[in-house]
Image (cartoon, rainbow, N blue to C red):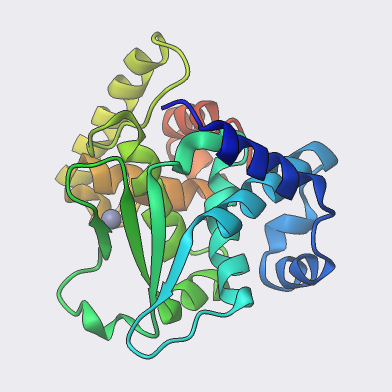
Length: 240
Ligand SMILES: [Zn+2]
């Protein structure tokens, strides 16, 4: 999807502004990974975060008022996983809806809602779940990362656990490794290195594996080195 000249111009203008000191404070306080980014990675992360935060439509629901801090925290999760991918990966996503808590979806761990059959999408997050996700940064559970992995997944048009890969030849290794570990998790959802929710279907598998890749990379690499490898190849980062 080619980007419009106006959108492009707006993005360049935002990125020409210095990155907010206030945002840096929030990031340093909330995200241990942030301080470990090297200069290049930090710049990419800042750019992705800025465009995400400024371009998406933010909507509070259930009486919640969206604050700047909420936007920074949620945009940081999106930018954390996308920072080495093309800046356009979230273009289909237009709106973030935030509920105060997840009681509104009692029967559904997965709270993602897509627009109908068009090039747009909405992610619904519970602020409680977002906070819980970052309060324990190494438990392979992070609702924001999970939902944004779904957004990347749908980047190539279908919601099937396979995002758009850079090269045609990457798909072979991807399918081979992902299907093997997905089948393994279905056979034995409890003793592996991924949480059982990933056994639901391929899309959930990718989202759950992404949470583990960013939150517990060492464990994932030790337990499933080939899975770690294809994810590192896709995200172009080495969290270990
Ligand atoms: Zn999900």
